[in-house]
Length: 605
Image (cartoon, rainbow, N blue to C red; front, top):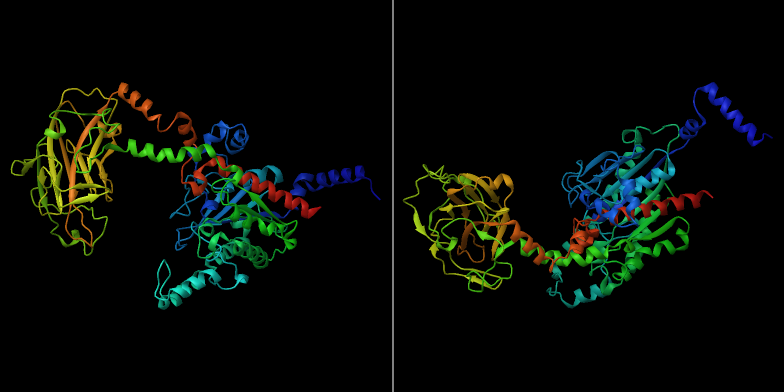
């Protein structure tokens, strides 16, 4: 029998003869480690790269940030981890595959699945810590789509067809004609057919993509050694929000059915991928933190405690990673955004509310004052067939062909002397919205759908730190200053107040000393139910000095404190996406990797 010392010497001599090191020989003999990550929007990952800095402000997560970045601050690229990422629009109608070495950008991609979306999910730190531990080539296959449930779209085949819970069926039976959200009897067959048609669709998209990648791993991972093959080394499941809020499938907060479905899911994935002992990590949904959704979190974790899954399924809680500082700041941000996004508020009768607390920091630019300015305006209708709408559309704003001679209507030297004169707001009909009613206007819009309006004002000085447009509008608009377009809004405005549009330096450069011309193009609004047209339009330019900006910022700290603002630097999305915080997703990815590594180690001991 050879001694360990003799075996080591023999390997070294063999390496010299054959021309490679023992380390290389060992690496070539290892199967490629393949990990599958799947789920819905949280697995897609909505953490913007801009939130990375926030990790460095917490001693607990600062070391993770160092792993995520290069010395120059750019996101790290993992040289030994390759990604195949199948995703696409909400309905999966235009799926695409993102490929490449793992780095930031393999998070949510929306309708452009092959392009870097500037976001991360748990895959980033999952791959980083796997690479750090294994020190060998790794392939990560990720499949994720937003808004998918386990009870329908990801439904595992062995779970059987979708059936209404007994409690819900009894309610439906009480209301054959439909009521309280219950479909009518004649609509229920169609409802079930649509449910059956959607069941399992995304499960099979996931499985088929994994099989496609594994049929030719070298297409994705150039370091793949065909002789050594590959090993399915882990599956991470991060999903649950659509099931959490589905009261039809889980009445009275009873989520036992989710536990049953997830157990079938684990079995079916292993069967369909021919990996009976595939290590499986359940990322337990942690939306709201440890004090919320306890029943659902327990149901998600239940399969890990089942005897058949002992030792190869583990549940990882993500609730401990919930950031309570961000959670506390988020509601305040809504109030803050409303304040800074509003130039002026209105009273119930539609007149300006001069007593609004935030009213006097910004000042009108130029003379006469806005309420005293005379506007010239004209209304027109679309005459070209291509400009007309065949049916009602809430977003009705569009550019139309103007009458001959009016092509340069927004230029300073255009002759508007024959247009109608009046003060603003210019309006028509009744705009009744959110307790504010506007039906008396200084100037009447007229019958035409589109409005062209112009005014002049004189500016003596430009001693402002920044400028903004204060605009009241129901539909979209173009705004021109001295013949230059400085803003366009193409949707419908749903705010009965003057919005605040802060101008950047390029836009503000068109404001000058002396005579200025402000021009606006807009259209009116109506609804199919009440076809009477209504509108209200007004706008002017305001400025704020550095001194007043400091006063405003200080006052706004009552709404959003410096601590709140710092916390919000770590957020880029809504609460159910873990605030789009890289701090949360980075911790999750690391925890998933560590749990998966433990399962691998346990299975080999």
